[in-house]
Amino acid sequence: MKIFDFNIHLPYLTDPDVNKVIAQDLHLDSQGIIKGFNTHYEYFSSVLGSNFLLFNTSLFDRSQADFKNLLERTPGDFTTTALIDVRSERIESYIDSLGANGVRAVMVNSYLQQIDTNDFPKALRAFRYAAQKGLIICIDGSYGTSQMYTYDNMKLACYIADHISNVPIVIVHAGGYRVVEAMLLASDKKNVWLDTSFSLPYYMGSSIEQDFAYVIRKLNFERVVFGSDHPYIPFESALSAHQSFFEKHHFNDTQISKVLYENAIKLFGI
Image (cartoon, rainbow, N blue to C red; front, side):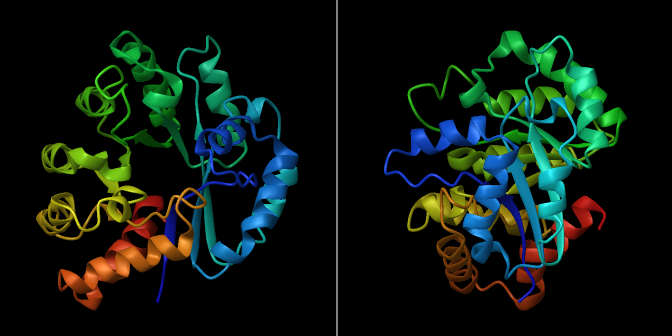
């Protein structure tokens, strides 16, 4: 089975308090990435493609050849996606550094970075510059916590999609509970993609699972990519949940191959 995992993180901390793991993810330096890579190597060594999400927004202030060389040990193809600080006054030069380091996509996370509507123009400025450089845009689409109405990531996705059409825009976690809203945006804007990480396994057994099946079919099994969100959801658990989902909803081998592998290859132009 060919698999490209769109969503892999590299914190090496194991703790029942997920907020502590996220905190390490947000501050993971070059040496930490190397340690995380070695810690989790067995989980992604079996896939043919990996996209590593790097959440330290100052990580690429200088060249990162040390962990880049390490990531090249990854079997198959690999890409990197970097979280960016859209409020930074030097965001353009930082994006230049991302390109120089081979980063393929930029990302924001409304919850973690507390991005509200006042920050939307700053996000657009950053994403427009990234798009000029040919970088893919990723917007976290998770939904929950008491901040679910304060930091509206789907509203941000719609705002950005209204202004940028020349590069793919990936809604990471597919909007979670709002997966149908994410599909409606993707139906309107043909450069919008969905990543299934975390959300599909999380909502297995609920009515949202039915929505995921509907959405993937509605998008004709295109522009939807598999992600595990490892280690927040262990790779094997995420893959097993997806396989159960595919079987339950009678997806055929061709359709499964698109979601697990082919769509991501197309997305990154590999």
